[in-house]
Length: 186
Image 1 (cartoon, helix red, strand yellow):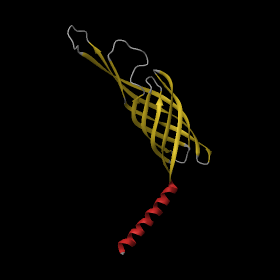
Image 2 (cartoon, one colour; image 1 turned 60 degrees about the horizontal axis):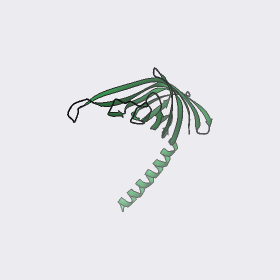
Image 3 (cartoon, rainbow, N blue to C red; image 1 turned 180 degrees about the horizontal axis):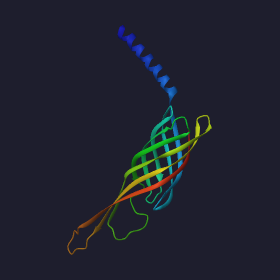
Image 4 (cartoon, rainbow, N blue to C red; image 1 turned 135 degrees about the horizontal axis):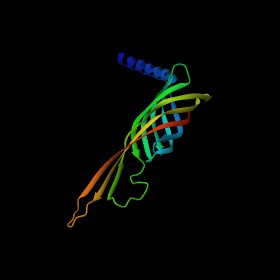
C-alpha cells in the first residue's frame, strides 16, 4: 500500500514539476538570412534554428545553406544568451559542414575521381533583439564564420599495361568570412 501511495505522490510531483518547468522553458524558432563577406567574394546564407529558450538563453539545433565559395549545408548547435538587461546577445554555433554536391561547379576534364567531404563549421558574434509582437523578435547579428571543405582528386597515370595507378591529391579549403544576418524569432 505504501508503494502505491509513494507512486501516486511521485506522479503528482513529476506533473507539477513539469508544469512549473513549462512556464520557464519555451520552444523557439529562429529563421535568418544574411550576407557572408570574405576574400573569396560575397554570398548569401540562410538558416533555421529550433530549440528551447530558458530565461534569457537559447539552445538549439540549426541547419542552413551557405553559398560562400563551395555551397554547403551546415548542421550546428546554436547557443545564445543575452548580455545583462540589454537587448544585446552573444552567440556561438559549432557544427559540421556537409558539401551540397560532390562535383565541382565547372567541368574539369583531367580527373578520374573528384570527392568533396565536409569539415568543421563555426560562427560566433553579437546581435541585437528588437521586440515585434508578443513573443516575436526581429534579430540583427554580425560575427565571424569559418567553414572547412575537403577535396580528394584522383588522376589515372598513363601506363603501357593496366591497371594503371591512380595518383590522389587531397586539398583542404578553409574559408573565413564576416557575417551580417537578419531574421525573426518566434
